[in-house]
Image (cartoon, rainbow, N blue to C red; front, side, top):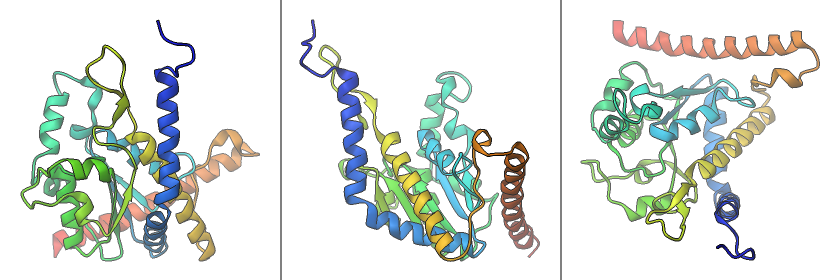
Length: 271
C-alpha cells in the first residue's frame, strides 16, 4: 500500500516535467536567441526554415508548423515511413521504422524532393542525435551552406555512441545546439516492482523549446517590420469572416513559399 505522504508516480512525473522546463529556461535562452535570429532572418529574406524530425520527433515539427499560433516560413519535412508509429507491428511497423532511421543514404532520397538555397536554414529535432538519417540531414544542409540548428538531449548524446559512419553526432554538426534538458533513456519514472522506467520527457522539453523559439522569432520579425502571418484559432477571432480570411492568408503565404521551393527544384532539374 502506498504511503499517502509519498508523491505517487503521476505527481513525480509532473514535478520532473516542470523541472525540465525550468532547466530549459535557465540554461538555453542564449541558444534559443541565436536560433531565433537565424530563423527570423531566413523568413524575412524569403528563405525557408526546413524542419526535420523522424520518429516521435515528428511531433516537434508539427508543433512548429502548422500549429495554432505558428506561421509560414517554417517548412515541415516528415516521412510516413519514419513517423507512422501507431501500427506498431505489420506494415509500417516499429521494427521497420527503427531500421530505416539508422540507414545512411535514406536522407538523400528524401532531399531529392527539395532544393536548398543559401538563405535557408534547417532545424533538426532528435533527442538522441545519433542515427543515420538525422545526421545525414544535418551534413547535407551544412554542405549546402545552411546554418543547422539542433534540438536534442545533450545528456543522451553524451551517454551513447553515434551510429553514423562519420563518427559524428548531431550536436557536433549543428551551428546552434538547443538542449531539451532531458536525461539519457528519456523515461524518468521508476515504479517499485517494474523493471524499466516509464513516461518519457523529451516531448515536454522539445515542445517548450519549439514554442519559445517560435515566440522569439515572431518578436524579432515584428521588431524588423516584417509581421508574420499567424495561424490563429478560429474560435477566438471576433468575426468568423476574419477568421476565415486569416486562414486563407496563411495558406496563400505557405503556398507562395512552397512555389519558391518548387521553382528552385525545377530550375535545378532543368539546369
